Length: 133
Length: 143
Image (cartoon, rainbow over all chains, first blue to last red; front, side):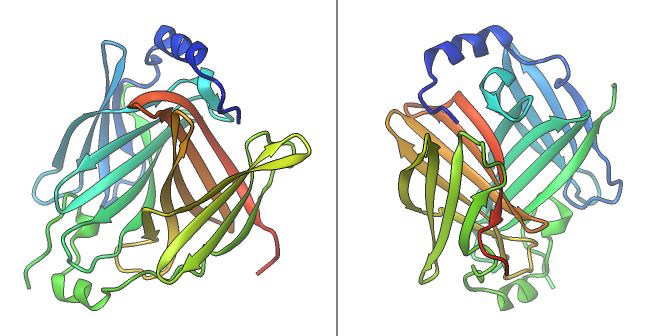
C-alpha cells in the first residue's frame, strides 16, 4: 500500500464517479435475516448515498439516507471498489464497510451500543443481491 | 419484559439478559502476532495485537523494501464480539493519523484469518477517499 498517493488519485476519483453497478435496491440473500434486510444505493450527483432498512416488526426500520465514503477501483488495492457508511442512532452507532464481489454486495457491520444496556458491541456480515440486476 | 431500543430485530435482546453480560470483552481471540498471507504485499506486513488491561493495543508494520516501517501503537477505539450476547472479541476498529492522512482500520476474524481493511482519507476531510485495502493475516505461531 502506497500511502503517498494523493492528488492524482483524487482527480481519477472525481472522473470515475459512482459505477453503474452500484445504484439500485439490494436485497439480503438470507430471507430470514434479523439484521439489514434491504439496502438502497443512489448516485447523488457523483456521490454515493446509502439507505438501509433493518428487520423490525411490524414494518422494516428505515435507517435513513447517509452519504457513503466511496473508494473507486483506482484507489483500491485488491478490490474493485469499496465504500463505508456511518449511522448514529443515539443509543447505537453502526459503521458499515461494503464491497461488491461477483455481483454480491457484502456489508460488514460494526455495531456499537451507547445506551448502557449491557449488549455487546458486535461484528456481523451480510450479503445482498441487486433486485433489478 | 421490556425490549431494549433497536433498529433491527437481532439487537432486540431482553434488557435483563443483556445486563447480565455487562463488562469488557475477552480479547484473547485477537491477541498475538499476525503476518500477511501475501509475502509480496507492499501494504501492512505484520499486525501485533496486545492487551493493556481491558484495552486492545494495535501495532502495524508496513512492508518497505527489505525493512518494515513501524506505524507505532494505537489503542483500538472499538472492540466487537461475534453477536450481541457474545463476550469473545472477534473484531475491532482503530484509527491512525499518518502525516496528512487518516487511516481507519476495520478488522475482523474469519475462519482463523485476521481480515484488515484500511480506509485512508484526507486528514482534513474525512469523506475524501485516498486509498482502500483489504488484506489477510495468519497467526505467526499456531494456536
